[in-house]
Image (cartoon, rainbow, N blue to C red):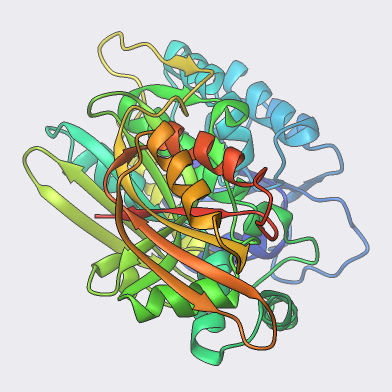
Length: 424
């Protein structure tokens, strides 16, 4: 039990930091169990009347992390390098408990932070780094502690989910939906991290670290975003009973595999029913079976809720919910995309409507041992181009990747072929 009241230093008073300060100071345990000792933020000119008087202000967050009168540091600055990284490492090295919402930092330095916190016997909380208000980390650490988890599958980026949902509902193209999402605040001015799968990959790496004690490097992870998904693909998928979702999947069944990419998923599947900016994470384990958690994945209030959860965990037991137990080690995985698993595929190939093209395609499929389940031809109005929609039987993902490269070099193909896995 950490001695009470715990003194807290908060580095970063943006939207989330402001909400955390508000929730802390309004809580009935404020000053009894915890209190805010100091804060740090860049723009001192901005009015922050919600911060109680008497709290120390640090212009340099690193000095806050070194303050000997602070027990717990909450890092809400963001970014995997620079001041955020320094604050986290300085805090733990100075034997302070650490709570962070910084997914990029943990995805990059989670191994080092975990080992250092374990060595110094301090609390390291990061519930807010994955899926905001969805308590997936707490469930894994506590409710499923006696389970062997084989796979995690999630919709971990609300922006991408919103885009796919709106394109289907309103039958408008990607760029128009993205502009609307930006106006509504559902997408950043620079949406690259969200729409190219990087944000979801960070979260998946953190869950892999927690569950499998394996930290996959993003450079070695298969990551594709939703920017290449077209209205045509979404409509076609719907005609065949599917939705397209950006799924983050980490499996440790036959081999260790991590990927973030668009999948076709049956409209009847529970993950297909996750609409708008919501997040959802499905956990498969040996005892509890499949478990689905869903809720708000971003926003100041859901994220602050997760930070508050970590604060009370810290108060209750310090290192009780640490990542490492009983001498466990963390392995860094440089390559998590040498797929050994087999899946069915949806393949769209645009071709000039001429004799022989289908024969060329089937020859490539034969070379890479790809068995076709069904094939449909959709002749486009007003031109001589046809879209071939192909559904395959189970095939190794590496084989399909090689086949697509060959297809794209064929004379008679228009643009690049597009292949998406089908989720069972």
